[in-house]
Image 1: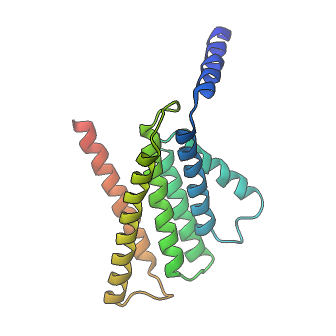
Image 2: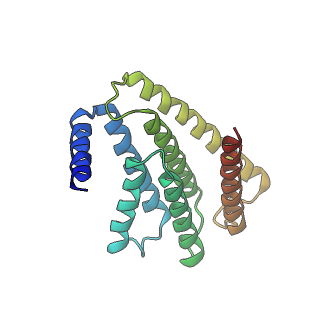
Image 3: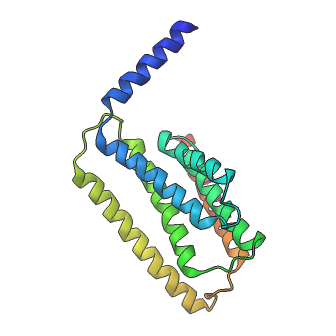
Length: 187
């Protein structure tokens, strides 16, 4: 038992000694983006005190385990904070905040995907990360423009948001993730 623990400690020390800058910066980016999403989504009345500590720990989880379920977990926490703020505390749905939370959710997801591909000791060309983030920015810009246009065309924009649209979007996202997981397991 002690030998197993000692072996794991030595392996962790070896991994920390070999870590390179690019994968570390990507993981720091994950933490910052996820925590910023929490700060925007949750109501300001809830944030002071212990909840900030719990949210900081939750934001660290996908940075340390991007291949695990932590990215999905933090996305659910962010959406839960959004629902708490709009439904529980009566915060009006502002378009800028909605777009910012959606942007941070996507950036957290795509940075977790990038971190899952990069070993801790990888030597990475900075152009790889730049191209990855440029593609993400293109997706975000296209989504924001399309979303605003659809809101204007449908006439549902403004300060009166529809709670059912948020819940429906969450259900579609969960259903899509479940379908993709099922398809991957079938292979």
